[in-house]
Image (cartoon, rainbow, N blue to C red; front, side, top):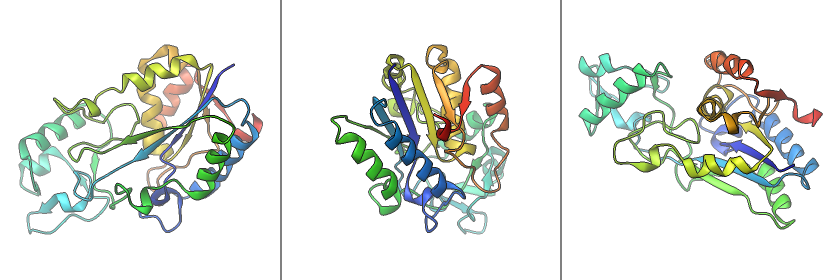
Length: 257
């Protein structure tokens, strides 16, 4: 049996209490993920770690927008296409692209466009893997194995929750469209364990994206004790998790494996 574990966005800004977008429960999740890796060092063949990797000036950060009074929107503000068309919020650049993005996002029925605190800025301490997990990965790697890192969210004009594709792919920007190389690489594994942050957003979207790939989907094992929700969004991804169960995707606790 070949086994892979995907750890989604185990970064300080999400997983440390001082992080700019701290997820309640993340430190305990990190401990369980680290213990799972240590316990199963010999049988884990690959560790894939996704990392948010953002610019301060991004479509989901305050500095990208001003309201009708010239002020930046507060964090956790939802901005709709209707808001932009009415002049309630004005993007600093690329208004046509921004309106197209919002239109496609809303038509998809996915998450509303939200303004987040600046987080996981490329190269910053907040974007780094939390030390507890990094050391567990390092110990695993010292047995002669290489882990894989996937940087996501680098483009300033689209949100990137799931690790395989942006919420809205941008024309002419292949890095925002399906990462087929990564998806195809998962075919060689018998079990693909899913962990990380946040359950309500990036983990849920990663799993949902794999609904379209049944050969990979059937290998997923959701380690439900290794992820937590963004506070205030505890139920936003419930339809995704119900759909996963209906598709036969496995759920387990890391301590039972």
